[in-house]
Length: 226
Image 1 (cartoon, rainbow, N blue to C red):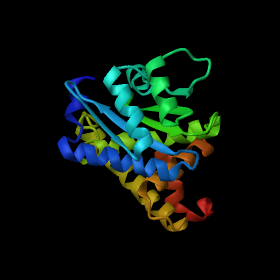
Image 2: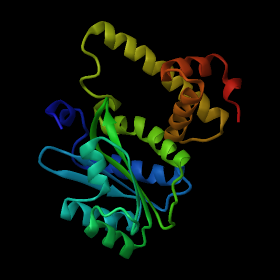
Image 3: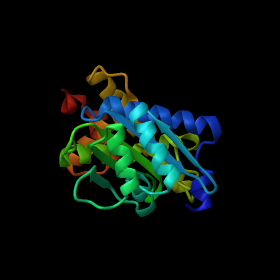
Image 4: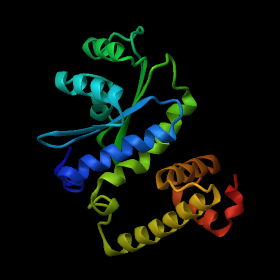
């Protein structure tokens, strides 16, 4: 990770708290999940949090040994879906520990600031083949805005290189936040993270940029009525 991305992240207890909140929110938002871990890689250390004992136990083994799907997702900036104990021969120590803890399916999604992975969001299920392509896609959408929660002020410090870009991005963020509020009200759901996920899904379904979808939602909330 380059220093500019490290500099944009929260520090100390604040980062650990944000990671734990993210893990808990993900567990609540994705029904197929039994436990969630979240980790961020700093230049000289690693910060890890979990929503429960299952994720906590398996994450500790992975980070102690330095091998596993969650670290692979971060290092390669790619999604990893693992059938624990299945034909995939990678990470035998991790797989043995995961089986012992009761995990049968693991999904690891990189947490990105722009296109750079800063860590991973790791979903565990006690059921085999628990995560369909639809669930994988949902997790990817959920992870997109999640990294922003781990950064100073909610955005990476490098986001605006000029004043003009900064103004445009501020306007876009204002529209997105308005749309998030609309979705929270329409669905009678106080979760900001789930509202952001719904907005990502709407943009994906409409085939438009997030800011365009946000503007449409704000202009006509009936378009996203449940």
